[in-house]
Length: 113
Length: 112
Image 1: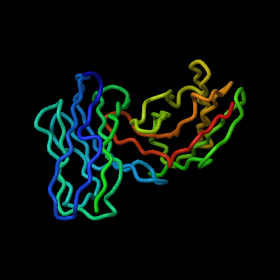
Image 2: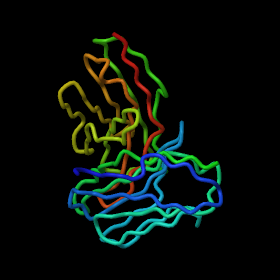
Image 3: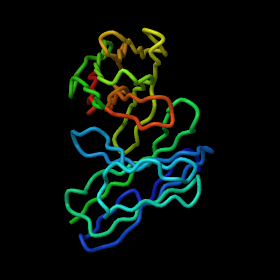
């Protein structure tokens, strides 16, 4: 595997379900990000982890819970979501201390029924 | 202060033509301005980026023009090809680590 991978690629869940999104980066980076991409809106930064510490939490509802067990893996735990949370969730990674080039995964298309 | 405004929302160009996408920002602390290209079903990928110490950067058919006094930057795609059809996002940030502030995206369609 190369670059940034995300699983699953597609997810359909009910409002009462609990699910998790997984991201893995194979680039040796030390910062990882979660973004939400909705139609006709800018990419919204949700969370930033640098050296496994959360450094940014962009006023995201508590029904989204991130976890970064090591510098290569990032999870987004989902529970009691709302239909308006349906979107493409993108993971990215970068190397702190350099330019801010972020490498994105292919995303997880989430649909909340 | 944190917004990046991008226009147009969509763009249709004939093959061989020039595609131009514009962005404007407010925060003078921004010093890194990348453009990302996104194809359907894929995540955004870095296309080209510029820092404010230069007014232009060219990579192949892609050129960023940067106007620091106007706080504007633009992407020019010369000799546009159908394979360039994608959504383009401008972004801005301060030196890493920092969040990228993205524009709303421009959907480019290049017709043969």
